Image (cartoon, rainbow, N blue to C red):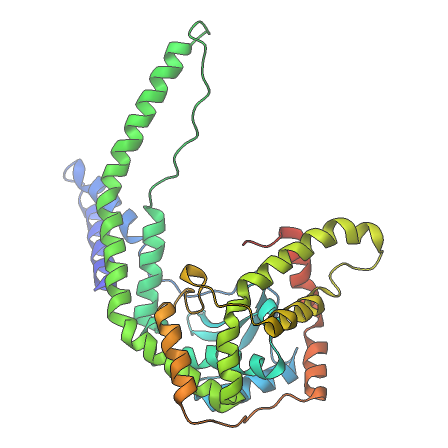
Length: 361
């Protein structure tokens, strides 16, 4: 329905714009309809140009691990791996041919023990299977179109309070009158945009509600694939350790500030060399202290594309009650060393980005 409405808006707007010059208003109505159709156009995913990207030729050991995990999960293999500074791991599609890319957050990779890394990758790959219609070509593009359209017509930020102007200043009356007229036009435009904004938001919520059962089943299937690949214990630990995201982010923010100030003055060495090792040690201390699980929006399972913290509780309960699965993939010392060597460049690049841009908490 979303794609049909978009196509109808585009074709009607194009017809009125090209063939509607018999009257004065038809071309302008056509331009308006085209302006509504453009934000709702289907979008193909794209890779982040700022994130370091590796192909199979660049990291054969890493891709061997990811390909084997994808085979166990029963999904199509990935074509690329990108690295970010987020505490997450996911799979995206990019290009018209819908190639697959594993987006791997280095904070999560550094914080997790080896088997939990395998479990997290398996969960991400399993969640991208065809069972999740939200990740499909039609429903997924409709959700992206609705999101982009909502952002295009969203309510503007309130403007700052204008400075007080002395009534005896030159042109004070003209400035005050212009401010009142500008505020009046802004209120009228907000009222005009209220209808499309409400319609887009309601449609997006309806689509998310209709696809929630399929998304939950996809998460359950991803947990099963994670247990088969890395063992039930590692899958459960990887799911529970998502609660470390906030604490790891705070520590990374502290390290970024420290290394941009104190470390630069104390040592001539590159400040990004030990960032991920320090995060690994910090996560191990948090894990040993058994950090309490957060509630509310920071709870595991509350990220984009998830079905909420209630789904997280169901996933943990399923893994606890399910029959135990041994590990099919085991990362040994030489394999970890090869992957670490292959990720030396992306680790340095992302660490430099963290030191340059900071961490958004």
